[in-house]
Image (cartoon, helix red, strand yellow):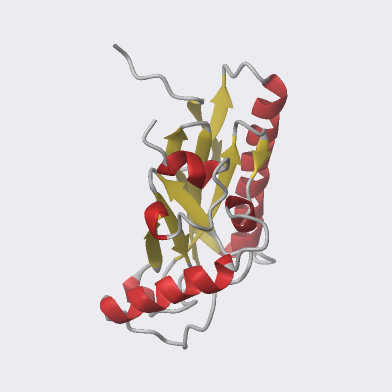
Length: 206
């Protein structure tokens, strides 16, 4: 029996020549066409934002650009994805990559910020920051600047029963470390998550 996902995904592409290609997802065949349009426009806006951020005011120096995406979760009425953009400028020491993410609650028909995953009034910022502090210590992660706390709208994605908090290159760690990713099990924060929200649905066994 074929697996059925809440959202059917097609890959689209912007092409700027052989060395400049940006691939991005688009939802299709959704019953809720208004929600499908909202999801697709949100994705396109993020693609354009990443391109503009990378190009800046020096479009002529861009020698290579590659954009890609990963679907991190497409189940239980939750769609979560990441989009990355690698760009190399002429005479730069190396290229630079940035990641952005989008999470949609298909049941409620909206895009989710980090605060939307938790019960109103819960101190999710401190709770998540404490868990990240523990991981930094346990994993012996080398930092270039002291980690104090996440921001209330910290970047994240959902992958099955895991909330992944992440940071950009150079935010916390040396470039060679890559993107600092901190996976947090939904069961470690189950007391503060919104039971009817995306993380609540991930935590159930139904």
